[in-house]
Image (cartoon, rainbow, N blue to C red; front, top):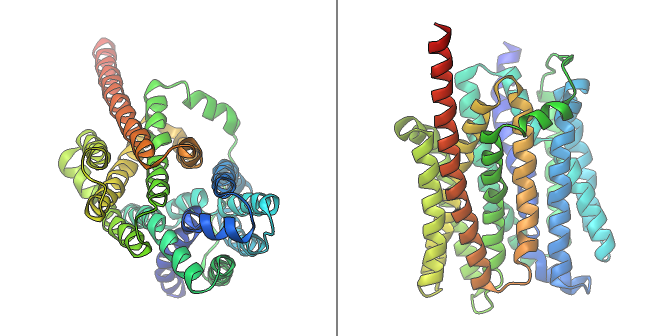
Length: 393
């Protein structure tokens, strides 16, 4: 009975932690100007600090998954949150570009202890139906965090200062650490006797369908981060309007709650193409129509909706195409997703608003080509499997 009561707390706690951890990927977007003026560094250097965070976060995603197999998932999640509270406090002490780079890098690495382990932890704790819903909520939480992180960061820094943003998150991670310490149960540690993770991942990257899938993944969060980065460059947009543009994006994140149903109705292929179409539409609107608050709000909804549809769909493609090595394939997925998010803002750094939007449009166009190739590859492998089974009979 006691375990049942605990279980009812585990789900909301996992979702809350997922949202709060992912928020810090985006906290720097509204802080480019406050930090650059306070630390007397250029805006570009703050953008680099954001990319350093994302790169080390992506690196951590590859490392903490295998570590949790050795030390136990509960240990990594719980103590990861505790160490993240300390690393987040360090960011608030940044006094120049190098301390900002260093502390954001450390923070990114420590926060990466949550996501890859949380996914496999839910597989250990819950049966299929409950697990599927929980994974949907965690995914939606990650997407909502893209907007929520910006809103929290923007609101706190305007009321107080940019350091207060990181002090707020330090307290949040400390509370999550204490709650998870008392609530999360330990799960069995399964010793993996198979070949090394690096060898398995290298093998996965030889599969054509997975390479094409990872190509799409590379642009997903990159498009999202680049869009909101580009919007902050519009000097004639008042601050209240930026807030509204971000708020409208949240409605797009809600769509990911229904992606599972949409995949059931339309199938993965059509859902993927619908996601790409929404992204293309959002960018074409900004290139062809006047850039006013209404078009920016519509594009904000379309971009977030696009990513909301594409992420669960591409996860399905990767999970189906990787067989027994699903967890390793999904670790690679997480790394690629975040690598894209760290590279995109650097790529558009020298460009103006319209140039940035043109690059994001190109991302979605590349996704379209890769998706067509992916479908053709899958069709060929299905035909090949059918021929082999007929030949065997």
